[in-house]
Image 1 (cartoon, helix red, strand yellow):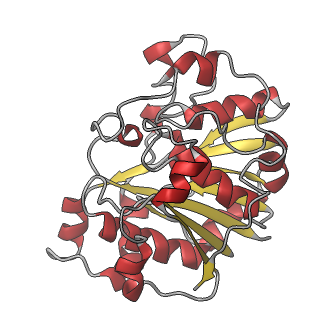
Image 2: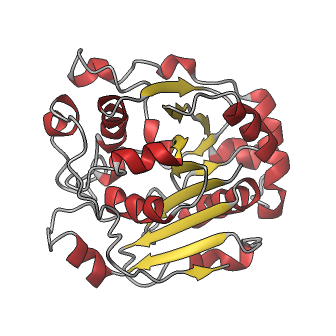
Length: 294
């Protein structure tokens, strides 16, 4: 079984402690997945990776794609309101080029599960279902307390093992979001579903990734779950294996903090979404995009 992970971010210290969160994320991802594709979108100066690479234990399975500001502007047709880190386009670039049997779309704030735990889960799953795994919240105070006031990056594995035993799944998040906007929304299975969405390769390719029209923050992760249903697949929430989301204040893809001033229309993104409207070239498959391997 080959598992690919697609991670996107931007070098803007979004939410604070971004370098620290990214270090935990990359090291755990490199250990767990056969292929890690990091897409750095629209960083003002240079990729986030270059600031932290000395703290990353690479092993040849890390692909680094950089979309600089001029290219990001071109790919969003110069829309000044496009999400600063345009998640749908960045994710699709990675998803289209991922080669795993299972492909994961995830965020920079996640400490990833042990390989053996993830494999046990995947081996028990239906290959015609799109899955989202509920996150477990982890604060910097908890991390520092475990490490006696420090943040020693080489010891992240013991941190993960400890909290896997001591932080239970967040079942209370189930069905939280549908009550906010649309009681007929049966697709928002858990809050913050985009932190860990995983499906077989053929599902991602069938639904053509994320809707590339939705270039603003919010609703894109629920949107892709509805797309999966409209394409004939099931969707399901899981709560194991344990994945940890490190706190970074308000979420909402930058909309709740004012970084982005415009959000996707809920009704376009969820209520009225049917099958994908992406072209065959979704993920800019007709563009030769360079990458580095670490």
